[in-house]
Length: 251
Image (cartoon, rainbow, N blue to C red):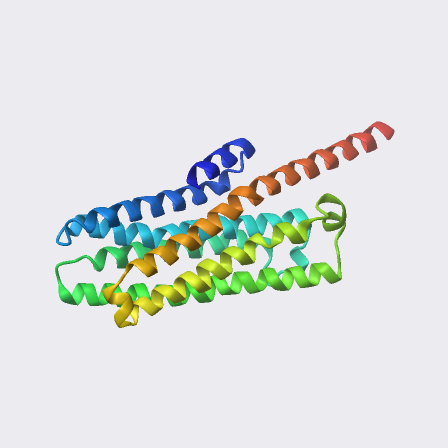
């Protein structure tokens, strides 16, 4: 899946899709470290890599999802239907994701400490971050649903002419949000709750986690929305430039 995203990103030159690649690599590193840690449960370094990488993967993926969401709104000229202006989205969403990612990294590192108190603090920090991420990504997903509803009732010229099939493409955003923000984070919180079966047998949780990431990366790899946004944005700029040249020639 990561290879597909590398190819699609380079092909379309949609560089804001780089976080899909980084997220996929983080998942790969995490599961590789997990397979090694089963051979030596006392190896803190391997366990630390596993914990941090599997924490970072979904966060990096949602980084690209949020960036693409803002670009998609811009292409559809649907800013008036969003709860936050595009200028705020382009600044606040990446900044919030970056802050959460750094704090998550710190929390993940703390959970592999030799100090019991540090591990407990790191665990609490990680749980708090899962809750904050769920609320934040839930907000962006709800905003997208509201934008879709309003745009469906009041189509813009761009949604009618530039991308008439926008509803199909738009489904990718709530797909990622519902799977990662809701499904994945709720599952992680359930694991943190100390359910006996999940503590004794971790493989169902890891398998479910991996399945969710494959679905998101697979869907976005086939229908590559970052590339579509860049293509349409370039086309709109070219059309506007052509119209301007015609006006100048007429004058």
